[in-house]
Image (cartoon, rainbow, N blue to C red; front, side, top):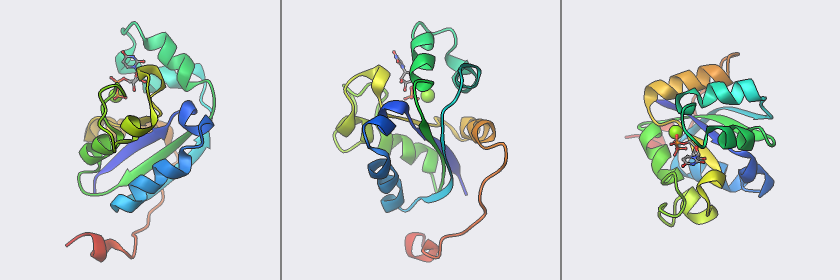
Length: 148
Ligand code: UDP
Ligand code: MG
């Protein structure tokens, strides 16, 4: 089953959006496979966002991610990468549709509350980076009520 890495960024934690965000993924039917509350250091944040290291916003982005604790999660389900990105909404909250997390809870692109992997392969890499100890093996008893 497909997995994705989802992170509630420091602004989402500070603003008390943790429960609301987790709830949206849970209610959709996705399965929580890993979760940790963690403050990361600069080298770690730079590694997570390595693909963006040439971008002009890179330093500000790293400062933002290390500015406080984040909630790092692994969610599992059919098409969870693509659907997770839809639940999150467009990168720039000015363009995220209402009903999405960023559309409902964010205004500025540099304070957009949440991260989600953009592909299955980047998800795999991000999960390995954030959860080197591995993740829980379990299957929800709701499975047959969610999947036909
Ligand atoms: N970002 C920013 N300014 C920009 C573009 C991106 O501050 O002009 C930040 C924003 O927090 C975004 C993150 O960098 O979520 C990673 O950018 P990416 O293009 O990967 O967007 P995402 O995958 O998070 O939607
Ligand atoms: Mg991205």
